Length: 622
Image 1 (cartoon, rainbow, N blue to C red):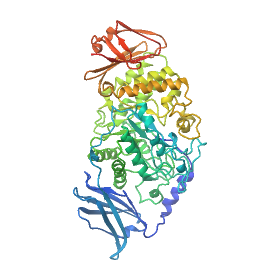
Image 2: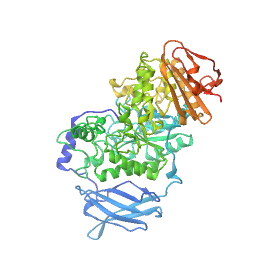
Image 3: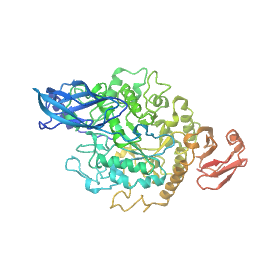
Image 4: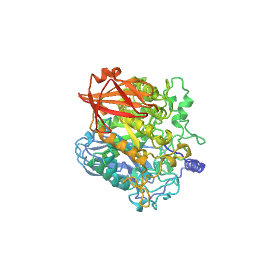
């Protein structure tokens, strides 16, 4: 999800466009076709081309090329559009083929469409999974590697770093220049908030109001820059996850200014906002009114809401995902607002993606408050009641809620460590809880250090838990050095610039310049755990066995093959002594281990003495 910007002139402008059907002016020889190119040898033979030019629907279409068949020409209300269904045989050779648009038996327009050769083994790429730890960053706020692209003559919003809601200049070059920082810290994957063009007059930095689905925003760089970033990340052993949106686009998108016709977006007599109650979609008692407002209402009046029931819309969006996977070589997709598009289309999308890339992975943003409702949106859900999203990973907001409260409140029967226990005890609701995306904060939430009242001990306990429990851990940029911010004060507060990402910054946390003692301690704690996690499959692949928290102490074990790990979290503000006899079914008379944080030998006796707010991660000797 993302921030919103209100301004009734957006809706009024769109209404005028719809009423008077104002068409974009384009020269007679100007034509837009999307996808802009495709590949030979794809597993799915069907390809649909969106063609846009003045009165193009008045033309006949002709394609004569070996292995390519024009199977259908789809016309819509607006004569400026055609949708061409092609069948590309499996053995069709790469190369250009000509699409001729004729009038009165004369060539009116001609377009050379490129069919590229696929990269070797492109369909066999491996997606992200529980062995990974993801670093989430917002490109505009991470690092400004190329100040020359901060503003752009064709983009409406210019850079203004003094405005918390403005564009600050972070870009692809800045990310690329700091991949070693991410790698050395111990991460294995990078999730980047949307990079595609957002040509909106204000509040466009977040990237969730796309105005061109096939173009990186020039203030971030170019399509080639993005592909180069992915290649550079891969060379360093880092995966890249692309943030995508199926629910809506920006009001300044070129096809919103000249809509193909009714049913492309949800339209109302007056602006109608979503009720944001995704729970209604799995609610057996929900009214159609509530469900319709949830799915058909707009996120904001500058974000038109797609009607994915329109097969032309769904085909456009599905092909766009596959195009970016193939073009950029990404390793995963994070789907924004997964429940908001029509759920049947989400299933159709995942089928198409996995038919081309069987080992790929997708995480859906299912912002639900309950485990059962979250489970509904995961692939092979036990609670789907016949529905299967096909989305392998889902965002675990119930776990997020437990983490933010557990380490900042007094212990009780259902408080403190018990909150985490209750969430994990409901994992029987999930088809694959190890693929749940777990996190302590993100770009829409309070900064974690703020949520726990700036308590360093609580921070270290929480990070220890996050990196040793089940699931795919995600750390939001800046969390590694205790960045603060409250979401109610505005999204700019939780999306502050990374210190050192700009040449004029007095602090440089990429190098460590200016970090406080507390920030250094937090960073080191995280770095040790992250790098160790890559060497121990018990925490990424192993079974989890936990013991009911007592007196604020939570103990659990991870085991995979001959690797075993014991984790002890003392959330109490008092020293605690725990008897090891309680854990013998997991310890199995183990005498020694290694303290992961210190590297020192750990000797097991009849009891373990814990300091207040202490965490221990112990590799057990067999």
